[in-house]
Length: 316
Length: 247
Image 1: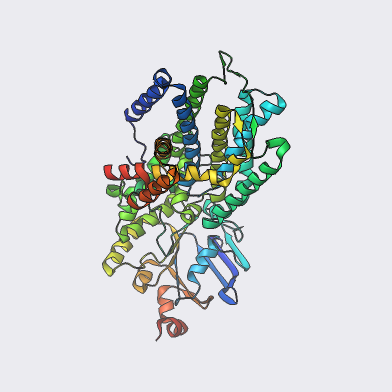
Image 2: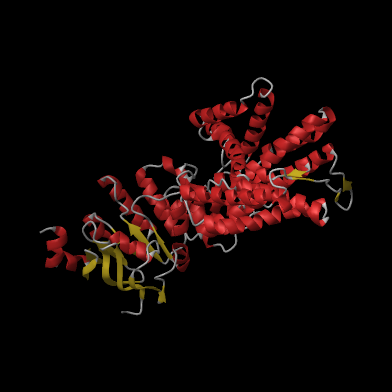
């Protein structure tokens, strides 16, 4: 395909099948695995939000944790301190981080390469320092624990204290977010992002205001990272300043690189794979980080484009 | 200056540290003309193109395009005013296919990029892309990732990208650099077909190519305009022969 937009039934079929399997999980898996899958889905969303900015625009941002953590607090604080509902919390978990991303991005997208990486780390460090010291608002590293009010969808009230209901809500939101991103990276806007990733100077010379498009991608990615943090907090009923720490971004970086940057599917697969690996290995040995490190290094050596990138390269 | 001048440089200067790369350069390019910029290495030719396209900003002087001052505009704004260029070192979207490369330029004139639209919906962009594939002779390589193209094809593709923005003025920076004589000849032939009627400023070292393609020549020397004229006039100019042709 000339524009690499594969048409046909393959995608809807695969997507439908996977969605059906995931929707059926609560019928044969116990509550522990439902919780575990919820967590994987949340981190998969975090990973694809990072993939937008890294895999499609080419900006290595270690600042996504800031938006993830803010998304968590955007759910917890309104519920706990303002008496708002779960629905408003989730909307705020997109809006507040997106607004912060606009601010951070305004300064960051002027920089390139390693300078961009460093400034995003610095912003996340500022965020986590503020989060840890502003105890009265954030609860610091201890965090905030809350009871999630039911989510009123008009036709139904979802009990957010129920693990299965939470799982379905997270599944639906992550699936929609994925479809949104998939459509976007193939849209005319996505072509601009990819052009910038491939050659910034050339993109500028054919008339694209590179900074503006980088900022736009940064805001969208920030909003979605925030949504991931919001869902994480909603599923745990807990938000903490530790979520803001820049190293939390490292999860998304590792999942994306192992799964394949610039593929969307890859980072989700990476999240599932590595989190499962950690889960099963922790019974055998304590040092799971060592295994994750080994997986990361072998991916970089054997399949630098990640698992999905490697498979696509073989098919061509 | 004549009223049909599309590009006018008025006493343009650019210094890097203490070095005057472009020193009070004035010139005027007419619509439809192919103007070659020649001069020894370091004469300021590429810097001049960088000033016109906003990659660098002039430290003094003015650059007028279609009568409007573009001296301080950014490269993307200048592109939208109607100036396009190729670079001395090939500059492509290297991981993308030939088709995607041209598409990226062909859609650049659109004002709004809908994040939820399918690009296929833009028939005009598709037609523009396909037309350019024909014009460049790369239609049968449309699906090839451009880093896998021959160097000569890459040079042609870059011209195709530059042309796909629909420029009124095209700047070409050493299109034949690094090509064999044979490849050069093929490129010049292709350029004649692709660039018919286009206003062009060409920087080129190969004097054969310059003499064959250009209407007028401007000779730069240490950032200054040394001479200007038809190819025959320039060849006959004693000063030019002394500093540039070394005779």
